[in-house]
Amino acid sequence: MKTTNVYPTIWATPYYTPSVMAGWYERSTQVAELILKNDVVNDLKVSEMNLNITRFSAIDEQGKEHFILDFPGQNPVNLKGVASGNFIHSKSVLSLPEGSYKALRFYLADWGNQFIYEDGMEESANAFNRLDFHIENGFVVENGNNPEVKLWFDFAPYQWKRHFKPLTDLFMGSKSQRPRLANSFGN
Image 1 (tube, rainbow, N blue to C red):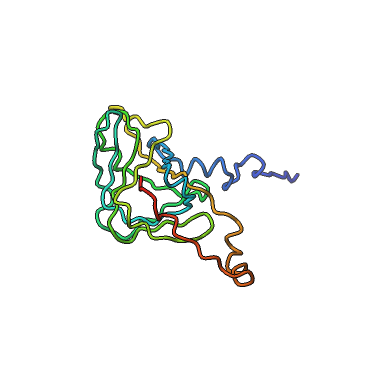
Image 2 (tube, rainbow, N blue to C red):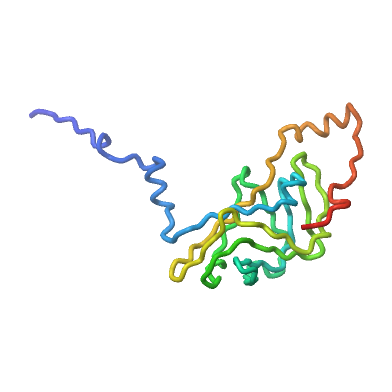
């Protein structure tokens, strides 16, 4: 009797290849990715925000504000920039009426707000009662085609030398800096 060698793994798909795993985690719904920008935040070189958001709204092309109840009274939300890979996934934008939107507005409580700058310095941002973020290339909600959204924030990336700041302060002495939000006019 003759022995025949069979190697079935030659034709089988490996279980954990990226192409197979992408199919496992693929979403059946459409997801729109919105990049949000704020000129004041970019000028201040903010890399991260801890915001106590009370209300959340979208502003359409005519300037009309449409409220979205997404953050009803909770602890501060940590927002990081695109470079960190973190985003906010929101299904509540599905409730927006049909139209074209140009900005998202976050209303803030008067406590628990903080900016963290690219050099690692932290500062209270309780002076702001709202922040407007412009949507890059706008966002269109069509009837019957309301995608879920990923909100990406365009913040300044952290500087690599911020990790060495405590060591340089030890040897060179800390230079006292005045707060960056002093004399700013908000947004």
